[in-house]
Length: 299
Image (cartoon, rainbow, N blue to C red):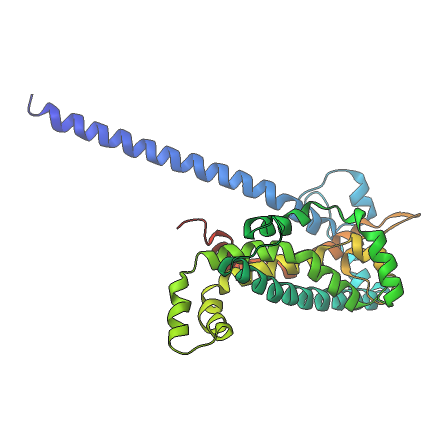
């Protein structure tokens, strides 16, 4: 009987170990399958940029040099052909508009989020919670509902087809999500740290810049990246409010659809070129995005 107990314990441990290994294998299999689902559209876009019209319309083809012979038709069109200057012009517009609008939205949203986290407001029956919800509720408003008044306003202010017009609009559109993220960020920071700075002689704004901002930096970076991505990808407002001088990359991509058909090779090359900067930013700043979006979720 004494020798049966160790054997039983060893068998139980082996069973537990086998269950853990099986669970790990299943988990990794599910993650790999999900990664394949998420990355396949990107692979399809990149591979399409190296196809010609015959390979695209012939049917599904997945592997280069096996199902199709790669060509540079799409890339030559945007890097060497007549579209090159237009691509560089629109890419510069997208870059400037995304960087500036995201910076303004992050700065203004951080100040608004700090105010909602540290001070008590009363606007009629509204309190801080109601004001915060009002900011988020603006994300529900469809762009088509406001584009006509904005179009008339921009026409009277001479802001149509200008970078400053899109920068101001994207700043306002991005503000709600920044305010929501930064309010949670500041709520997760102990107020005693700012009180200690005030006791040491720092002003309110000085304590905000020297104490709060460095701690909340991951959240600010995450908010900035989200705003930049939205501004870089936004198409509807850019299509309505611009025509030539302030045209952005999404407008150029949509322009590959014409009465003569769809230039899939050029559209795929442009889409790949537009995705690459965002992918690099996401990979390099991944830890800031995760920290920023999860801060405040666990106390």
